Length: 344
Image (cartoon, rainbow, N blue to C red; front, side, top):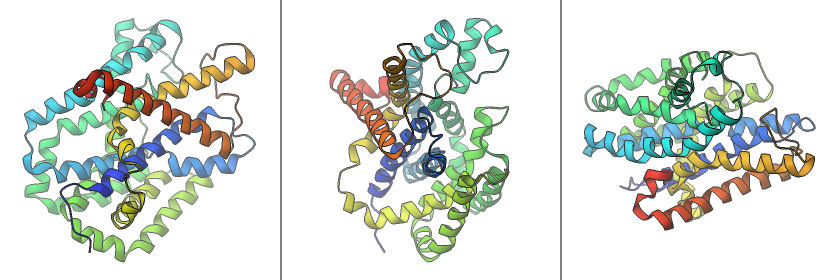
């Protein structure tokens, strides 16, 4: 058995893997996959809803660091490193989608509202930029952090609720009329599973190693359901990715040293990448449409670049590279205050 360390390097590496998958997931729709639909569905299964991994990691690290938990300090730190960059980095998207063009996928009545109400709804839901739903959703977890602490310290037997909550998430799916509340309910078992894995670390590692094959089978069934487009519910990505979270954690515990420090910086600035990468996806999309057609991309449908492994790899790689370069530049200019502005 590998010994538990104060710094959980395998979880740190997992965070790097998760943010790369999230960048890939948000890049996929920018390409035209009509010529390779099966490739698209396979990549989509692997990358889409990798926020499940992020919530598992968040729960794990929350429990791992909970010995020194102070609610007031905790909220102050989250306000500084999550809410502040969320508000600042939302400004360009808020201006674009309230003053220049209409955001696709909004409620039919949304643009009949006064601008200040549009701004409020955008910020409460994160709908102004694709990945930013994450912040209103994770904020709900921050606000009930004392309840998670009480569960972990006084009633860890309640971790058994993960199983029915997981089944509920598989049935309900991620989206619903309540926006961040629906997403929080959906992701609750992933967050609690991360907490439970940290709380019972040695037991969790042993059980995952012992039952890796059943976990892999369940995960594979979820992947098959998504790729083959079986009827929903159930929602197959949650079925696939919660068991996969356990498998990846144990795999990285054993083999993360093979990666050395290759993912350390990406993992370290993963939250910053989360905040800024959608802007670079849009920037590349606007640029390619203009170069190919001599017109500005106005938000309709996908781009015109062909969807295949090569183009996808280059596109996602460029988005990741530009995001990292921006963050490095911001860190150099802003120093220790960079987390307030870009989350990294």
